[in-house]
Length: 476
Image (tube, rainbow, N blue to C red; front, side, top):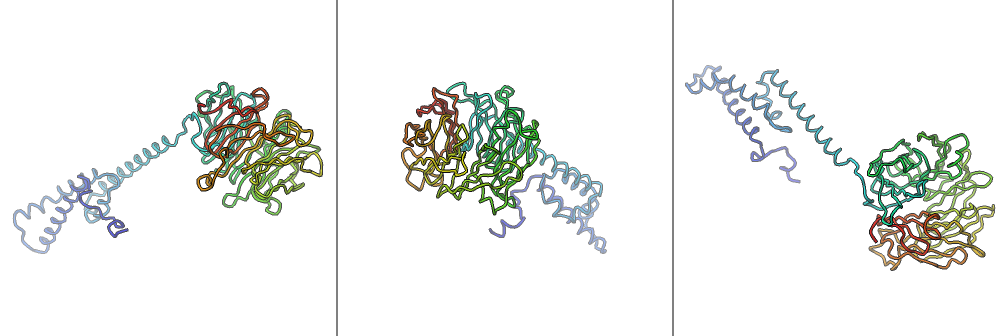
């Protein structure tokens, strides 16, 4: 950077007319002061010079009047302190007061303009990658969250999905979402470290509305996963309220954690347990699932290829670890009867594990030819010999690798695999053009069930188990 660029020098051509006039009068006033000094020293002044000295007070008043007209942000007033000292203190005080008022007015106007630009608007679809999807309690609406900071509610009434309500309140990407019933039944979390609770009763949402959170919890970290406890959704949790499990990624001084919260009807949260000891928690959890049995459990999956089994009661003790994959496990799905846990891993496999027995044996391996991010199951799913139903998997290379590495023609398609044999029975066609992030099983839709998928491409699709598109957020 040049000296001129670094200095506060302002070329005369860039001065305002008021600044130029002020400096012109200041120059005249300095000439008068010099004449006055000569006169005081005993020098006789000529007639015209004497007139200039006599007009000093009038000139000072003229300077003061132009000082009031100087534009906001000018430096000429402060850079001519010798002239300022000649002005009446009351005048200087008035000038300063007016300049402060003008500065405040300009700042307020700028704040209003920023607030207007940043004010949330109703969204007709997401304009950044969608990372999670969940079903409303009425079964007729979907909720999605995105890196664009918004949560959207979609109606399943027509093939072309339509947004009913925009939920605005997060200050960063929203990564986690889950829904139950009630005024605070929709929970979302993201990069801002906050969990917001929203109105989940779709009958109380106004079409075209931009909704604000009903309650907020300062979670800390980057919130990646939220899961309501299924057994609490009707009868409530022991001790009242409903339990919500969360997983967060490290952010500044906040370590990665798995938490269980008790959430009241109005969104008031109480921390039941927090697991963040690096000796037992191997980094962030990519997904969570509630498990049943004699006592409530929580399953977590991690980048080291392990699944952790945690007690959902007391202090959240680690009950067991399962080394299942050679690469990160990104997603989990639990069978309808709660006996089988299915994983989706970047090692291009999905494993079905029997979690109803202490031995936790792997029942079936489902192979793919791409990294897997998402998995969901049909309601009649049963793995392995004598099995039934289907497992749906998808993923694809990370978005950053797509432009530098070769991809398959069907890299981002969802594959429907037979639960018993693992053979492909159906596939989507040109559904997404980016990695699939999450699935949602929708057994109540279609002839034999359906599933929703969300992707890095910012699209939401609902497919039947035959791969056909049932609903989409864009015209097919």
